[in-house]
Image (cartoon, rainbow, N blue to C red; front, top):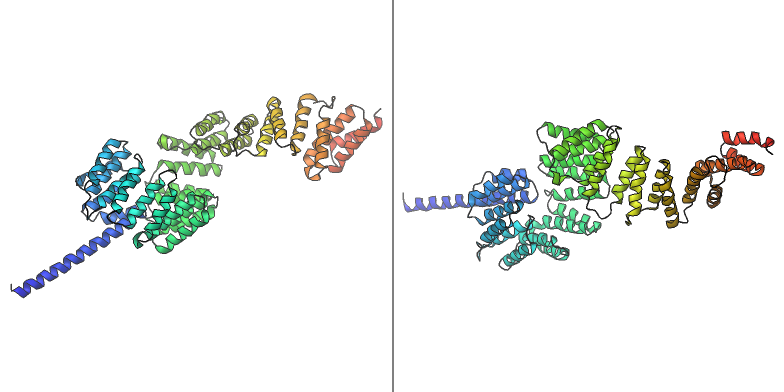
Length: 526
């Protein structure tokens, strides 16, 4: 082979090698992008065709995301001396609650950083930031050290995420997300992160603007639509939540978890039958997750299929990790138990389990939900007890109607000893509300004048009638008041008042039997 041929061959070989190197870089970049956008199945398909340490690292991270910890550990161990994979092993150790082991791997990874390659610092910092168990300040220190040598968008994103883990770190997080926007490859992600920060601060207009901007900057980014679906769900705009989760699905991998999320949104959008069908379809394909039975059970409760709701909630409790059971699981189960007289007595225990693990500072919505469930089951005493818990909680979530319901539920349960103090408390808290006077009249009538002989409730009824100015929209309650007053007058042989109140009864209800009978009896009264 002559010299020219050798030169030509070398040139061709160099071009091929350059082309392969560019292709590898593009493939790696595409895989990393998909990983960042939580398109784990697509990322896995790319990284599985590659054999380098970095691709291996991402394959391990994907297994962590899929909660396959043993598989992740085995993957990282293929490259024990590589800093990325050492950082991956640190994540495994943190998830195993082995902080000492994690710290050792993080230090080994960070120590491999060089002046021209600061990535080991980033891998080590990411392990701390994206796994619970270590001080985020250590991650911040590593990110800043890396930024002294090289600035890139991923470092600023990581630094922002680390600051978000600190109390009061929102301002620094926003600054770093804004710095990240200078780098085209993470602009969409940076705006998505900013949107999340604004949303957490309840600045919803800014959050929506950043989510929209994230979508404009990269049409392939599904994350803003997922965030919007979650946001609309939290403000009870379930139709918009569903629309956005459908847009998210279009851009996502449509993984099992994505489809489960969609089925969950169908439940939230009150499309209960569709939610049940979607979950059952996924289970039929072998994609079973314990929490899927939760959605099925909740949905069946809402469609009044209580027998199957209980069956699926029993499956859920049997299969779900106890640490992943939420208060609502026990609350819903209690409501299901109330629908069967054979199990209703077990509901209270279930409700109390839910309350015991509820860490929210204001439990009034949960108490109210339970009280309403007992009301629906016509277990009025139990309902009164839960309304009383609201009243006694001194929570800012207490409403005037809670006092009223507490008293009225006890009244319906004929527990007048508890009904009266609740209604009196209602009156003292809201003296301008005439309803409390009406119910004091009802309680007094029931406890002191069942046979209309003493007139003990007379003053209360008259006081209430005066306060409402005989408002005809209160017809049902007025009929009750006039019946009592007419009967007291009749029993006392007070012909004038008997006629007055029987006339009022007939004016409100021409066919009223009490009013008609008293009218007939008046001429014979002495």
